[in-house]
Length: 265
Image (cartoon, rainbow, N blue to C red):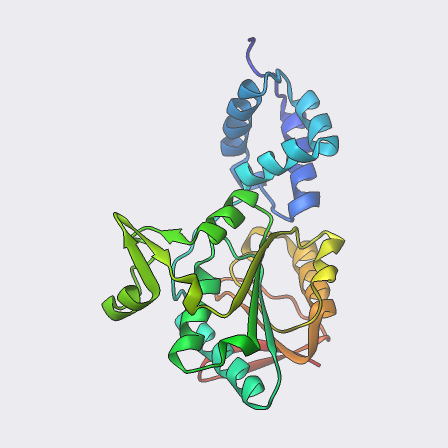
């Protein structure tokens, strides 16, 4: 097969398509993206970027494979623990008041955040049948990893030995989460910019941490506006410490000892 044809304008066209679909601004990583795409295209017997862009628009299977290729996923258990503790204490307060609590993790990456919340809920004695956690991610490979629930030593580095022993089965050299100890959990492949997001229903808490660092201002605004549509009144949303959160009159910014969260007004 001949060398993959990709002009500078072709590459920029692909990057713009990827941005429209995922929000990710890949311009600063364009050479890395080009190399990844060239290798991907070769395996698909596609010899130029124009053909790939056309398929990206109309071939849902190929589009998902490409989105899996270009999205970034890096996390571990109990990341930014103060926020997780704040979220689960608020969830427990709602539960004690007699309600069922729904938490959304978007994106959920490979599932460590979702299961961290489950571990914290169990550790404080929260009724597991009153808590439902939904994890969504644009990357279907990551969603499968969530469902498998198998993690390496790096992922569990922040857990105590007692937590590893209680909440995981050791399957050398990895750890598999004990699903039977978790609250109600579901994982779905969903793009937050697709209207399938709204079919998930309403949530008491949303965690969307370290996703908007890859977005420009317009997509950050769009993100928090879309989340507002699925967040209950006075519900909380937690962003990552590195996220640039634009001003929006849909939320009040709250800063307390646990850190920062945003409350829907």
